[in-house]
Image 1 (cartoon, rainbow, N blue to C red):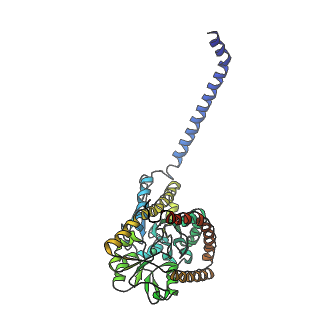
Image 2: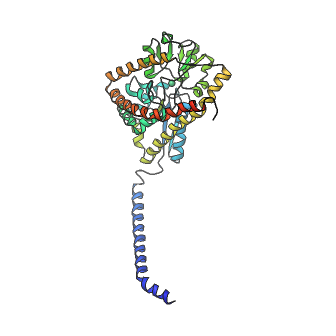
Length: 387
Ligand code: CA
């Protein structure tokens, strides 16, 4: 008891001091909250949190197309969920508002707010765009994401598209594509001579230099074009998407590897004015939803390609073939020439190439002892054994 009284006597001034300090803190917090409430009320009419927006998004793919078409649908759904319905994005398939290959102009001119497609479709307007989708023998999917998001690639992409009033973002990745569908075997580079093939981007120029003819056609026109002989060969994506379009019904040989598209990145493009109209939180939601839906596409292809390939081979008697090394070496020589020509004629391409090439050197060096070494050792160690 005596000890208790002594304790109280010694510490009561301190307890009073603490109580006073706590009271001061509570009053300060109350005053701050009051100020903040007043502030938000005063700007409520200017940037109300419940203002809602509606965007049109046009795509280069048929409506509800699996795989490539999933990115725009996922973006729309994610943005709706994350913004609690404040930003609605309506997705239109190729041909619904504008033709499949009219997406770039439509978004640039504000006919639509956003678009989904592939940058290399626009190489006639933006020569450097090929680097933002895929260049032959270039970076794979993992490396492309690294270059875009941590290697300066996205800043260059934005610079290249700024004159067109467009904000670009990665909009998916296919991983390594397949080399394409042919109706004859390719045993030497001479077998490409005279072939008319749907193969876009820089690879198309390389194919043409090798003696063939390249064309860029949207996915919706490919089956009929090959069936009727308008083209002799085509490349699209890989087993999961190619099976859906039914190319195995009109071509016999399915070639790998996709030397021409080792890790193609799809793109979202957004009209700069449409983006600027959004409050900062909705802009952040658009960016994060784009990034998430971009990664999601690669995840889906990784999960679905093998089963589709098995079905093509076992149920549809598709003949799987690998391009001979001599053919691939010749195509690399053509690629070297195409890169040199592009860099010489277009200053922006020279700037993008310098960044891409430097990143390539570093990531190739590291992947030599990491990803590449590991994938090789699986074959060495496991051989034909299952995991
Ligand atoms: Ca392709």
